Image 1 (cartoon, helix red, strand yellow):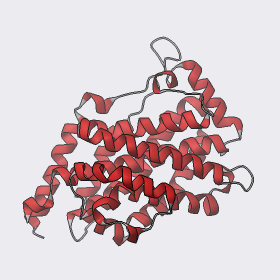
Image 2 (cartoon, one colour; image 1 turned 180 degrees about the horizontal axis):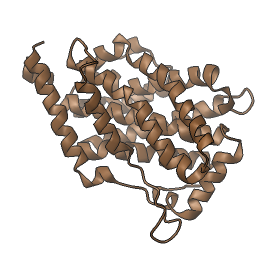
Image 3 (cartoon, helix red, strand yellow; image 1 turned 90 degrees about the vertical axis):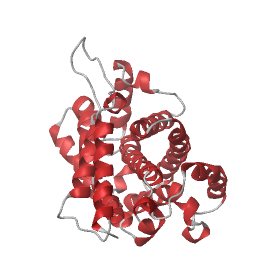
Image 4 (cartoon, one colour; image 1 turned 120 degrees about the vertical axis):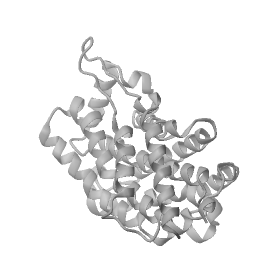
Length: 306
């Protein structure tokens, strides 16, 4: 693979970053008017993610055999930075109002960012990424694949590279859920029963993937990551409240924030409800970034530079 090929890909990413940053929807904000004209709650994280992606893909300290490995590792190394922004702005700043808790929550994210990076670096992911095909082909196989998943456990060897990537994120997160709940953060579940947390997150992720995959064919790149994350948050909040919907519009109202704050504190700092919500936000990011990679490699095929 030539240096020119890598340079061209860096330029593609740079141009994409510039286009995304300048797009109005990518600056979309959830605003909470706690008092008229003041104290706005905003999510600026997507804006930061694009900066981080480009920073890591061109940073000379990260030398990989080719650009695929570089952008793959770079994207997922941004998770800790994204989590920092999300926690401070969405959970801590307006809900918890406590720096000490802020530090604890950020430490929580940092702890399970490590296994994410470790699992992402597996050769399987890089190999699969090299076989990404057109988005229409992914959508064509998706519903059948989802039906198989609902009947039997995922097996990497059961699927061809053509249809593996859309659900690779699901398998990855499924593993992370178990390893995280069993080893690192046992207090996320009530007592010894972790099934409710796992069930909730599986429910959230499957619906999120269906929605986000459909969005790819309809919406431009600029909207994919934002819509994926927001839809994921909406789905989880709906599930956590036991069927009482808290849509994105009502979520940003004063009363809904009070409801969410109550849920988060119901079982303590790292109780079940808060655990489901914060973990779901992080996993929405994983899914969103995966979709971003799918889109980039479908739109800018490496074959053009061979």
